[in-house]
Length: 208
Image (tube, rainbow, N blue to C red):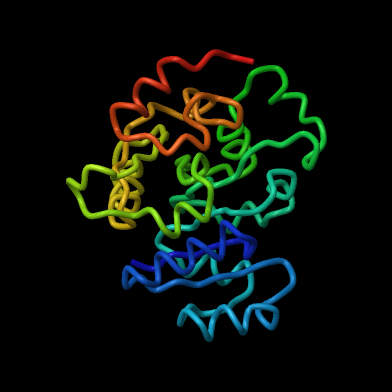
């Protein structure tokens, strides 16, 4: 699969390494340009590209940028794309976003800024060092699970398959309007739970 990754911070770098290790073709980009990604490209075999090229070249595009940067992305380029939303809302970093303060899930907000894209929320609840080190074979007793939320069933299955391939159980967490249950401060966030634990944590989440 061809995977575009927008963002080269900790999340984008970890996903680049993980997906390349799984044999996927990865096109990675950031706002500083491909020249800033030469070391990551050399290390992983990913292709460094412009943001537009990474979007256009990916069958799936992971958005791993600060949430406040989403409105600055080239929205038209995402039309028809399956987008993995790896972002989280941190007001101290992103500023106060009134729609999110009023109860809109951050992934619904992302989808509203990327019209025509199919957005799926994943990889946002696990510390990136753990994503890099805690993958286990299917059936392993210490295998961690990750929630995946999205409105389109096929898109969600595709992303769940990527989660599984990285060594984690994927748990269906409902639609984008349910994805607040996996935002920062909820029981599942940063918890490294198994599949049953993730389901229980999602049920136990309460709105802020």
